Image: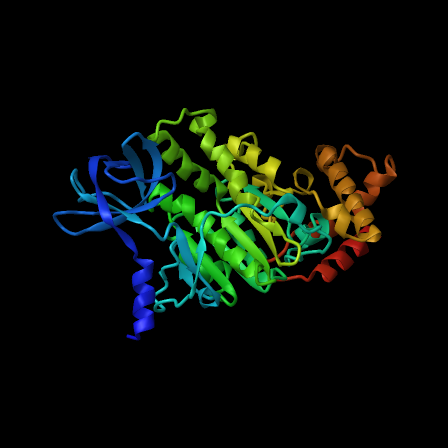
Amino acid sequence: MALSSLREKLAKKNYSVAFGEVEKINATVIIAKGLNVSISDMVKIVSNETAQETVGMVTEVDGSFFYITPFSFVEGFRSGDRVFLDSTGLNIPVGDALLGRVVDPFMRPIDGKGPIESAKLSPIIKAPIPAMKRGMIDEVFGVGVKSIDGLLTCGKGQKLGIFAGSGVGKSTLMGMIVRGADAPIKVVALIGERGREVPEFIEKNLGGDLTNTVIIVATSDDSPLMRKYGAFAAMSVAEHFKDKNQDVLFIMDSVTRFAMAQREIGLALGEPPTSKGYPPSSLTLLPQLMERAGKEEGKGSITAFFTVLIEGDDMSDPIADQSRSILDGHIVLSREMTDFGIYPPVHILNSASRVMNDIISQEHFKAAMKFRRMYTLLKENETLIRIGAYNKGTDPELDEAIDKKESMQRFIAQGAMFKVSFEEAVTELTGIMG
C-alpha cells in the first residue's frame, strides 16, 4: 500500500488520545463523562472487554455528562467502556466513484462491488442555499410521466412532494421518474423502508440500470440516527454534483420515516411529544433538509421529489401538513384510482405545482386548465351519468367532457416502463383539448 494512501486512511480515523467513560447505557442513549464535547460531535465507543466499536453523536450536554445517540446497536457495551472524540466530524467521502453504486449513509458500499475510492470529504450537515443566491425557476424539468409533465409541470430546481397511503403506488411512480427524468445525475435515498424493497426497487422499478445513479440506503432495522442522517448524507451527495454545475434529480422515500427517526431520538432525550407523538424537533428538521434542494446562481440545481407516507390516507397528518407548507408543490396519489386500475394514480384535482404557470406556454396553460375543468365536471356529475339521469344537450361543456372522457383517461394512464417526452405529453394534451 502506498504511503500516501496509508496516511489518508489513518487521517480519516483521527481519534483523540484523551478518552472519557460510559456512565450509563440503555437501548437508545449512552451517557458518558470525561470529555469536553459539543452538540453534534462524533465519538467512538470502544468496549474494554471485546474491543467492539460503535460510532455515535453527542445530542445533549448536561454539565460534565454528555448524551450519545449511537449509529448502531449497543449490545455488548457496558459502564466503564472508553469514549473517544472523532476530530474529523460528521463527514462523508463523495465523488464520481459513487455513480452506479448502492451505499449506506457513511458511503460504505453494500452492493458487493468492492470498495469506493472518493478523495473529497463533505460535511453531512450544511446550511441551505441563501435566499438571495437562489436562481429563478424558469426551465421545465421533464420527468417522463404524462400526467405530471402535462398537468403538474415541474421546474428545474423545484421541490415537490409525492403524498400517498401505503400500497398506492408511490414506489412505481418513483421508478418512472428516475428512469424518465431529464437529469444527468440521479440520487435516490431509501430511508426507513423495508430491506426487501431495496433490491426490488432496483430490479423492478429501475430495470437494474443504475447508470449515473447513486442509491443511499438506511433500512427500517437501522438505528434512528442512521435513518436520520441517511437523508442528510444523500442530500450532501446531491450537493456535490450540483456544485459541479450538474442538474441533479433527488428522490427520497420517505419523509415520514425520516421524521419518525427524529421522533425516536427526541423522545429518548426527553422532548415533549406534540401531535401524533412528534416532538418539535421533528417538524423543525424538515425545512433543514428540504431547503437544501433548489437552484443556485452560478451552479447547478437539485430538483427534489420527497415521498410522504399518509397514515390512514389522512392529509391532515402533521408531517404531511408541514411538508406541504415547505415544498413548491404536491402530487397526491389516489387509492380510488388504484382500485380502478389507473396507474400512475395521480389525483389531478388535489395536486398542484406552484411554478407551473411561470414556465409553460400560454397554449399549454389553457389546455391544462381546460383539462382540469372538464375533469372536475365529470367528477361532479359522475353519479348522474352512471345512472343515466343526465340528458345530453343540457350542458354543452359537460357534453364535451363526456365526449373526451376516454381520451382524458388514456392521457392520465401510462405503463410503468413507458417514457414519454415533455414535448410529446404537451402535444397529446393540446390535441385532446382541441
